[in-house]
Image (cartoon, rainbow, N blue to C red; front, top):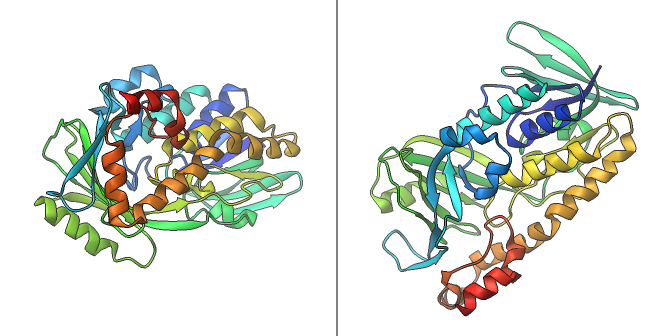
Amino acid sequence: MYDFAVVGVGPAGARFARRAAERGYDVVAFESGELGKPLACSGHVSLDVWEFVPEDAREELFQNAIHGARFHLGGADSEAHPFYKDDPISNAVDRVQLDKVLADAARDAGADVREQHTVTGVEEFPDRVELTVRGPEETFDVTAKMVAGSDGPRSRVRDALGLPEPDEFLHGALAFDPEPDHADFVDVHLTVPEFFAWRIPRGEGGVEYGLAAAPGEDVPALFDALVDDYGVDVEHRCSGIIPIGPPDRVTSTRGFLLGDAAGQTKPFTGGGILYGMTAADCAAREVDPDRPTTLSNYESAWRDELGRDIQLGHLVRKGYSAPEPVQRAGMRLFEGEIGVHMDQPTSLFSTAQLRALLK
């Protein structure tokens, strides 16, 4: 019997597998396909990402340094409102390779990570969980003391454990222009209902174009309009579901959720890489597979770490739908040098941001 069975080896699942294995637990982790594929997530991340990956992996992951963002209320040629720092505020990274690096770190820590293994069933008992796993050659059963569901926004583990869904699901789409671009600003367009579109220079990795929109919107048409406005030809189109708003409960008797499965994302960007890995660290620290009551410690710990930023992130998102005169006035008031952290809306009230405003 394993201590933990992890379903889904994206950043959150791989991080938990690594940290739990480092604590001496017997961990098995299953990824249904090839690690990192299909791509359905942007690779624009804060500098904090480097705290979660092995130091020697930086060179193979790094693509470009970003110093700020230009916000637009219209298309590619509309007025730009820059928000920036003198030093890099974020990085563009190889998103597919990031998953592979994190999974390898879990393997190096002692976790049994298996690609091309699909968990088709999860059954929870008072003293264990039983998983049915379809591998490349056979279907077999696995028994563990606990299961960690990090299998994305349409989580099979969440459904099997009878846990509630996140509050909302957005539809996201992105694609790439292969032409290298080492510019140091991203462009954000508040032209999409209830969310935004973006352009991210990724160095030799080209340029990423993407957007997300509320259910019911014609995302393919909105995306075509975005790339047509920039006059580019894109390739490697992909799309995915973005969960927004974690449910009231992400734990059961013998199971818990991580990352997108738990809705642990930024409401104002949809990004979940850092939030999911932060929650994974909380779970590895708090959950004892021999003491199911410690699951409540995980519920409290990750909400203490992320709850305030998620709540404030909802308020930031409301600004995307404010009347245009209000948006324009706000941007003109606050544009320029900033002191905020891209993952932490609470840093809007920091001394660093106050100093930037006064400067």
